[in-house]
Length: 163
Picture 1 (cartoon, rainbow, N blue to C red):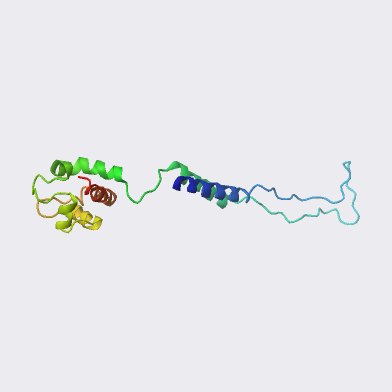
Picture 2: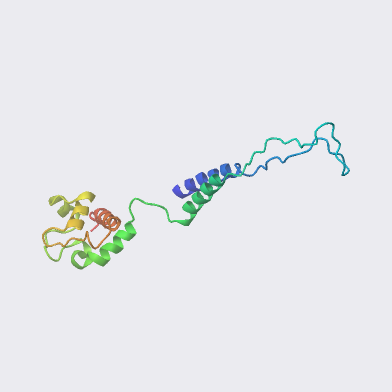
């Protein structure tokens, strides 16, 4: 649904911006030019020039092209990438927390009940724990980027009641 909405907005913007440069401008003209090669003039042989408006707008064209590239060239922006969170968890956390358990301190599991007991059933608390570490858990703030930490924290939070 969101992708189709983006498509509609992009198509509308593109059509609107195309109208900025499609219509050609008017060229100078001589009002008394006969069908032959001789020009008939009364007093002044100067050409009468109508105002020329250049309809091409490179800014609008660039904006439309940029919008289309952004919509169709990139994957959709999501606040949380749970697939990335799962892969980060598998690569960095599963050695100690496989299946939501804890092989080092067995009562501090990643299951919902344990997280509630220890005040960690909140994405912000999980982010803080992963970033800074605590007790036996090492800090991952230097090893993982902020987006990866947010993704893994959201994945753990979503998975906590399913383990």
